[in-house]
Length: 147
Image 1 (tube, rainbow, N blue to C red):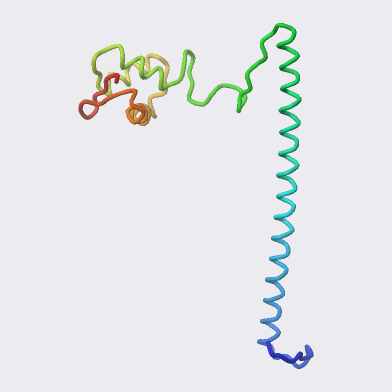
Image 2: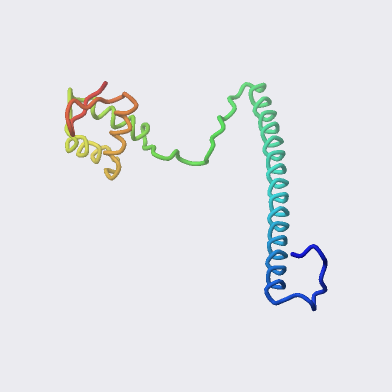
Protein backbone atom coordinates (compact mmCIF):
# COMPACT_ATOMS: atom_id res chain seq x y z
CA UNK A 1 0.00 0.00 0.00
CA UNK A 2 1.06 3.57 -0.51
CA UNK A 3 2.48 5.60 2.37
CA UNK A 4 -0.34 8.10 2.08
CA UNK A 5 -3.86 6.99 2.92
CA UNK A 6 -6.33 6.97 0.03
CA UNK A 7 -10.06 7.00 0.35
CA UNK A 8 -11.88 3.87 -0.76
CA UNK A 9 -13.32 5.63 -3.80
CA UNK A 10 -9.78 6.50 -4.98
CA UNK A 11 -8.51 2.88 -4.84
CA UNK A 12 -8.20 0.78 -7.98
CA UNK A 13 -9.89 -2.61 -8.32
CA UNK A 14 -6.55 -4.42 -7.74
CA UNK A 15 -5.87 -2.40 -4.60
CA UNK A 16 -9.37 -3.09 -3.28
CA UNK A 17 -8.94 -6.79 -4.00
CA UNK A 18 -5.54 -6.86 -2.24
CA UNK A 19 -7.05 -5.03 0.73
CA UNK A 20 -9.91 -7.54 0.88
CA UNK A 21 -7.48 -10.49 0.77
CA UNK A 22 -5.41 -8.94 3.53
CA UNK A 23 -8.52 -8.47 5.65
CA UNK A 24 -9.61 -12.10 5.02
CA UNK A 25 -6.19 -13.30 6.08
CA UNK A 26 -6.34 -11.23 9.28
CA UNK A 27 -9.80 -12.60 10.09
CA UNK A 28 -8.66 -16.19 9.45
CA UNK A 29 -5.66 -15.70 11.74
CA UNK A 30 -7.93 -14.21 14.40
CA UNK A 31 -10.31 -17.19 14.15
CA UNK A 32 -7.39 -19.65 14.32
CA UNK A 33 -6.06 -17.90 17.42
CA UNK A 34 -9.50 -17.98 19.05
CA UNK A 35 -9.81 -21.72 18.31
CA UNK A 36 -6.33 -22.36 19.69
CA UNK A 37 -7.18 -20.57 22.93
CA UNK A 38 -10.46 -22.45 23.24
CA UNK A 39 -8.67 -25.77 22.56
CA UNK A 40 -6.04 -24.98 25.22
CA UNK A 41 -8.77 -24.09 27.73
CA UNK A 42 -10.55 -27.39 27.03
CA UNK A 43 -7.30 -29.33 27.38
CA UNK A 44 -6.65 -27.66 30.73
CA UNK A 45 -10.20 -28.43 31.87
CA UNK A 46 -9.76 -32.08 30.82
CA UNK A 47 -6.46 -32.27 32.68
CA UNK A 48 -8.09 -30.96 35.85
CA UNK A 49 -11.00 -33.40 35.56
CA UNK A 50 -8.64 -36.36 35.04
CA UNK A 51 -6.53 -35.32 38.04
CA UNK A 52 -9.62 -34.98 40.22
CA UNK A 53 -10.90 -38.34 38.97
CA UNK A 54 -7.60 -40.04 39.79
CA UNK A 55 -7.52 -38.64 43.32
CA UNK A 56 -11.13 -39.72 43.93
CA UNK A 57 -10.37 -43.22 42.63
CA UNK A 58 -7.24 -43.41 44.77
CA UNK A 59 -9.29 -42.48 47.84
CA UNK A 60 -11.90 -45.15 47.06
CA UNK A 61 -9.17 -47.75 46.46
CA UNK A 62 -7.55 -46.79 49.78
CA UNK A 63 -10.87 -47.26 51.57
CA UNK A 64 -11.32 -50.68 49.95
CA UNK A 65 -7.81 -51.72 51.04
CA UNK A 66 -8.47 -50.41 54.56
CA UNK A 67 -11.48 -52.71 54.76
CA UNK A 68 -9.31 -55.69 53.81
CA UNK A 69 -10.29 -55.89 50.16
CA UNK A 70 -8.23 -55.70 47.01
CA UNK A 71 -8.67 -52.61 44.91
CA UNK A 72 -9.20 -53.32 41.21
CA UNK A 73 -6.31 -52.45 38.94
CA UNK A 74 -6.91 -49.60 36.53
CA UNK A 75 -7.13 -50.49 32.86
CA UNK A 76 -6.50 -48.02 30.11
CA UNK A 77 -9.32 -49.40 27.99
CA UNK A 78 -12.32 -51.26 29.21
CA UNK A 79 -13.10 -54.75 28.11
CA UNK A 80 -10.86 -57.33 26.59
CA UNK A 81 -7.29 -56.48 25.72
CA UNK A 82 -6.52 -56.13 22.05
CA UNK A 83 -4.68 -59.14 20.71
CA UNK A 84 -5.63 -61.41 23.57
CA UNK A 85 -7.29 -64.78 23.56
CA UNK A 86 -8.38 -66.94 26.43
CA UNK A 87 -5.29 -68.15 28.27
CA UNK A 88 -2.93 -65.34 27.26
CA UNK A 89 -1.91 -63.14 24.38
CA UNK A 90 -1.55 -64.31 20.82
CA UNK A 91 2.21 -63.78 21.08
CA UNK A 92 2.43 -66.00 24.15
CA UNK A 93 0.27 -68.69 22.55
CA UNK A 94 2.47 -68.71 19.44
CA UNK A 95 5.59 -69.02 21.61
CA UNK A 96 3.96 -71.96 23.40
CA UNK A 97 3.07 -73.62 20.09
CA UNK A 98 6.62 -73.23 18.73
CA UNK A 99 8.05 -74.54 22.01
CA UNK A 100 6.29 -77.90 21.56
CA UNK A 101 8.88 -78.98 18.98
CA UNK A 102 12.57 -78.21 18.37
CA UNK A 103 11.68 -76.31 15.17
CA UNK A 104 8.48 -75.74 13.24
CA UNK A 105 7.60 -74.54 9.78
CA UNK A 106 5.11 -71.75 9.22
CA UNK A 107 2.44 -74.15 7.93
CA UNK A 108 2.67 -76.32 11.07
CA UNK A 109 2.49 -73.23 13.28
CA UNK A 110 -0.53 -71.96 11.35
CA UNK A 111 -2.35 -75.31 11.66
CA UNK A 112 -1.79 -75.50 15.42
CA UNK A 113 -2.72 -71.84 15.84
CA UNK A 114 -6.03 -72.35 14.07
CA UNK A 115 -6.66 -75.40 16.25
CA UNK A 116 -5.94 -73.21 19.32
CA UNK A 117 -8.46 -70.63 18.14
CA UNK A 118 -6.01 -67.99 16.87
CA UNK A 119 -6.97 -66.03 13.77
CA UNK A 120 -4.33 -66.99 11.18
CA UNK A 121 -4.32 -63.74 9.18
CA UNK A 122 -1.55 -61.98 11.19
CA UNK A 123 0.55 -64.95 12.28
CA UNK A 124 3.48 -64.07 10.01
CA UNK A 125 3.65 -60.53 11.39
CA UNK A 126 3.41 -61.80 14.96
CA UNK A 127 6.19 -64.32 14.37
CA UNK A 128 8.38 -61.57 12.89
CA UNK A 129 7.64 -59.42 15.95
CA UNK A 130 8.58 -62.28 18.30
CA UNK A 131 11.78 -62.81 16.32
CA UNK A 132 12.70 -59.11 16.67
CA UNK A 133 11.95 -59.32 20.40
CA UNK A 134 14.36 -62.25 20.70
CA UNK A 135 11.70 -64.69 21.88
CA UNK A 136 11.95 -66.80 18.71
CA UNK A 137 14.80 -67.54 16.31
CA UNK A 138 14.64 -68.49 12.67
CA UNK A 139 17.48 -70.78 11.59
CA UNK A 140 16.22 -70.58 8.00
CA UNK A 141 13.38 -69.01 6.08
CA UNK A 142 9.92 -70.09 7.27
CA UNK A 143 11.25 -72.16 10.18
CA UNK A 144 11.05 -71.01 13.80
CA UNK A 145 12.26 -72.29 17.14
CA UNK A 146 12.30 -70.88 20.66
CA UNK A 147 15.21 -68.69 21.63
